[in-house]
Image 1: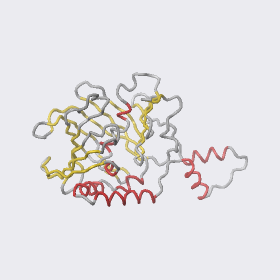
Image 2: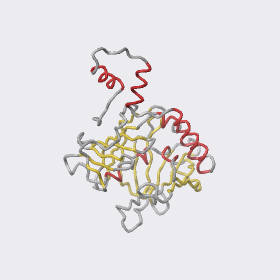
Image 3: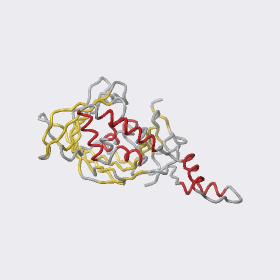
Image 4: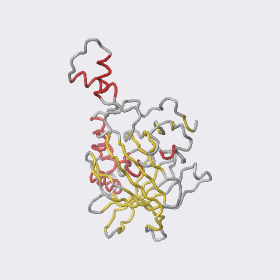
Length: 300
């Protein structure tokens, strides 16, 4: 995987030393100052505070308790944020001939920023700064899909249940169901008006009653650019498959998506998704998620 602007603390120090005739000894204070000024860093106090607020909020409702228990079962919200930006390859493969989407991506889980790199062209990139969507590629066919919509979409599957701690998220406990011969706690997720680009989206999440781990995701897509007159696509049913623990966080390894049947079961198999190359990045420069030079700003 080739990353944009990839640095480490040692490489930053090497540059500083090369600019001085008489290098000064390295000490812990020097390293701390370099790290503070040049790489993305989240203070432990911020992580602890955010997790504490989420715990208090989620445990104030029965649906929230289910989600909090799921967060704990998947490694804990403190660990999720303390690990730093998340990197993974998300290979989305429609089974009906529609456009595949395969990219390496690095996501700032703290503030929902992202940079994607094409899995087939390391010079093709797109991203979201938190305010602006951008694309940088020499070939206009590198991404034959809506990159603004896709910038954070994989995170809202792969980052479950941790992505449910933010503002504008509403949780409702639904009756339990049986799925793959196991009882599941079921939580419906909706969003306040004005939350993100598709606030009418919803998710229905299945969590093992005993394990508290996520087992399935039902969802709709209501992105206004796809449905200009309102409405949404039919509901889908996504199987969550496999387990992969990285830096203390439990992730799935793949998904299988189906159309939802009338009796709320997985029907026709429509999409395969493989997730690989998972790691957390704690050496990214502070401007990593900014719009790169010569990139095109989208929708401005």
